[in-house]
Length: 210
Image (tube, rainbow, N blue to C red):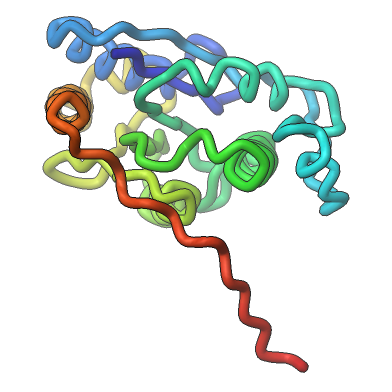
C-alpha cells in the first residue's frame, strides 16, 4: 500500500513539509510506502473550463505539474494534501492545482473514488479551519473516504522549528497517520474478501435555471 503526500506550500522544506514528515514517519511504522510530491512555486494556469481533459483521457491541456501528478496518482492507495494558510484559504497555487487535478482526474479518469485521503493545514495563528473546510470539499466531491484525526488537521508556526513546538499539532498528525494506515488495511481486507466499493451511478446534473 502506498500513500502520496502532496506539499502545496511555496517552500519545499517549510512548515507543511514538517507536518507531512510527521505523518510519513507514522505511516512507515505501519508498513505503508510513502512518496512526496511538491506542487512547487512556479505559476500554474488556472482551469479555463475548456473540457479538453475529457477528450485527453483525463490529462489537462496545460502541460505542467498538474499533469505530472495525474500521471502517477493512479499508482497510490491514499493521499494527504497539505497547504499553508493565505488569507484564511489555501494558497493560490494549491487552489489552482486542486481545481485542475480533481476536475481532470475525477471526471476524466475517476482515479480518486474510494481512496482514503486527508488534508492538513499550516498557519501562523488563524484561518486554518476555513482552509481545512475548503480543501475537504474536493475529497467529498470525489467520493473519497476522509481520514480523521482527534481534532482539526492543523499545525501552527512561522517556521518548521516553531512547528516543532506545537506538540498537539504534531500529535494530531501522528494520529492521522495511524488512522490512514488502519483505514487502508481495512479496505484491503474488505477487497480480499470480495467487498468492493459501491458502484457509482451516472452523474445526473440538475440545473435550476431553465
